[in-house]
Image (cartoon, rainbow, N blue to C red; front, side, top):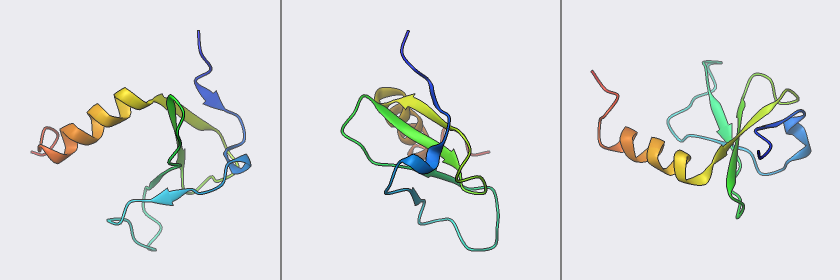
Length: 73
């Protein structure tokens, strides 16, 4: 089984938030664009906390479903 978390997300560089995020302190996720098989995802309010390592194919499917309004009511 592959590793699914990174205990200290601050060890990675290049974190970015969605262009839809603002500085109002809401609930934001950050990701690091990588060439690996996983996409690191962390809570922007906890930059030294853990990061989830999401398989690239699963992340792409999630983003695609957002773009096609799958989760909008």
